[in-house]
Image (cartoon, rainbow, N blue to C red; front, side):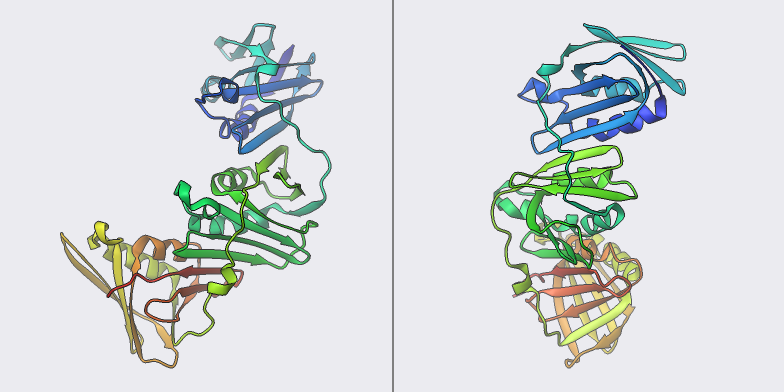
Length: 362
């Protein structure tokens, strides 16, 4: 079996799959990349148990068959190829890779040593891939990282008629992105945040086809299809904890707030939740931080509204800057109290909402 393909095409297609496949695993089969060859088409596939991936690319292929080989080694070879095109000569026991003056041979293993994967060809729904990616990118940061936090380590997707919403929370902050579009599915599901990372990288402009069952969400974008294993458990009733009354709110450019918090937070005490203090009064937002190396402060002019004249709060600096980072233009930050959640709204993109719980200062 022989393949002739552009090096750039091979590199890009292989990249979608290689990111998913673990370099090392207690199950040796999981580190394998499966290659399926048929006339005019080359298919790569692999899995890490949470995500199954298949990438299909058109190529000059002579012969049909299936083989497997270590994904990491093959990917390193392909990324280093010197010429614009590459030839693959696939035998029973080895594959020869030739590009320009370079050539190497890699050992193959039987195709059935790789995970046995199934990918549906029937999709019940479709959504704009850029819109889906935007929703996921805006909320992924708020997902938890600790294993004991269970479903908090996932991103919830609500796919309803005229309603697509992505939500993530770790119990101390929350991010939501709501789109008034229809996907064709009617389901709520939770996908591990690490799997969401792979999905975001895979999505390309155009339609993303969707399918879902009790075990997984399937997303096909371009020539790549992902089976994303669903998380078990119930996502918390996040709507209940979003406050509705705000005695104080301020409006200002998001970049000014993010930059000022980052500068001041250099002096924040890392052992005290990376704390920065905010004090708002008479249209001025004062940001301060103090730690073992000294003290920093910065004042920002803001548009202040609300029934109270002033408010003082403290936040984890990273949580605050993470909430502000997705906002490109002006934001409104609304304060419900000194210890109750604060809400960040993107004035240019009302689909985005973030919530951050202040630190207790008493």
